[in-house]
Length: 128
Image (tube, rainbow, N blue to C red; front, side):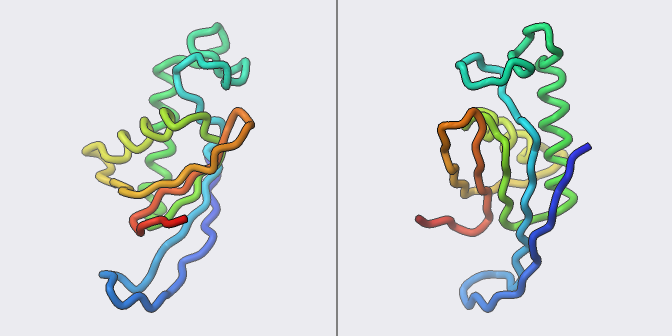
C-alpha cells in the first residue's frame, strides 16, 4: 500500500501567479527502480532476474504512484526512493497520459551516492 503524507496546503500572496494557494505533498514511492541494469538496483529489483521485478509490475507501480499524485493534486511534490532519472522520466510520462493529464514542467533531483534519491516536481519554477 502506498503512503502519502500531505505536508501542507498553504496560502501565499504571490502577485503574478494565477493562484493564491499552493498544495505541497511529500511521497515516499518506496523503491521505484527502472528496468535498466546499471549497478544501482537492489537485488530484488533486478529486471527479469527471478525476483518478480518485471515490466508489467513496473508499469503497475508507475500507474499506482500516478493515481495517488492525481488524487492529491499537489502543485509541488517531493518524491523519495527513486532509483534514477529514467524512473522519474517514466513517471512523468505516465502522469502526462490521457488518464491523468498532469505535466510538472519543473523538477530538481537531489542526487546522492546511495542507490536511490529524492526529487521535487513542481508547477512553480524551481531555482537553486
